[in-house]
Length: 83
Image (cartoon, rainbow, N blue to C red):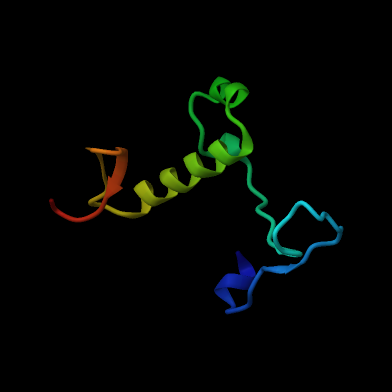
């Protein structure tokens, strides 16, 4: 986060070689899912991808005063604005 605020990319060459990956570059995400997932016992059934998605949605909803969760034809979506 500090790098992004300073205008620097956090993407680097990965410290390992994995031929199954499409690119040798990546970025890490250090976060504590317990800060965002409630109730915490839900963490037992969430993989890291779901935890990250949940955290991003929680951060988006808490920083936008007009954020609302709406039903769409493809599922649920966060919508911003007075609509």
